[in-house]
Image 1 (cartoon, rainbow, N blue to C red):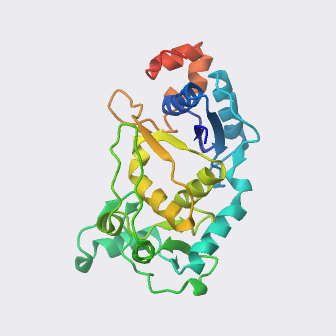
Image 2 (cartoon, helix red, strand yellow):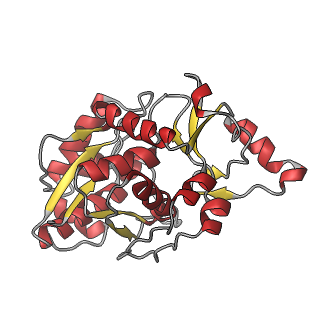
Length: 284
C-alpha cells in the first residue's frame, strides 16, 4: 500500500507554527515517498469550531504550498461511522454509560480510599464509579466509556506498533492499560459525539492511513488507538511522533497563542520559506 498520511486540524482557532511544522513534515514525508497526503477536519466540537477558522486552515495550508486530495473528510459528516463502531463495541460487552462529571471524577480519585490521583492521556484516570452500569441502560445524557479490563481480556495477545519518530514506542501491557490509561471516554456526554480516540481510529482506517505523523504530545494516546484498532479489526499504521515547536520559555504552542499564528506572519510579510526556516525545515 502506498505511503499515506494526513494532517488533521480542528477549526477552533488559527493555525500556528506548531501546526505548520506538523503539516509540512507530513506533506514532505509523503512526497518523498511518492505517497499521498490527505487533509481531515476534526470539527466535532460544535461549540468551538467555526466556518471562519476552517476556511483559514485551507487558506494557510495552500499558502504554505501544500496540496491535498479532495474531498476533504470532515468529522461532522462522518458520525454514522463512529456510531457503528460504538454499536460494535457495545455488542461485544465492552462499553458502559457514565454519568460522572469531571468534578465527580476528581473527588472520587482523590478520596482517601482511592489513594492519590493518577493521570493518564486524558487527565485523571477514571476510578470506575459507573463501571457496573449496563450498556443497555444508557441515556442521552451519559458519556460512553470503554471497560479496559474487559477489552484487554478479549484479546489473546495485546497488539504492538512501530514508532519511527522522536518518542519511543510504548509497549502495550495489561498493567499499563489498566493503571496508566483506565476506562477511557469514547463518546462525550456534553456534545453527544464520538471522542477523539474513537474518531481518529475510525477515520485513519477509512482513509487508508499507513503513517500517522503527529506531535509527541499525542504519543501516550497511541496505545489506546492501537487497542481500539485491534478490537475493531482495523489496521495499525506506523506512527511518527515528532518534536513540538515551543516558545522562548519552552512551552509548546497553543491555538490561543495568536502571536505565532501563521496568518499574522503572513500579514507581516513572511514567505512560506520563512515559515519553514522558523520551524527547522529549510528545504521544500
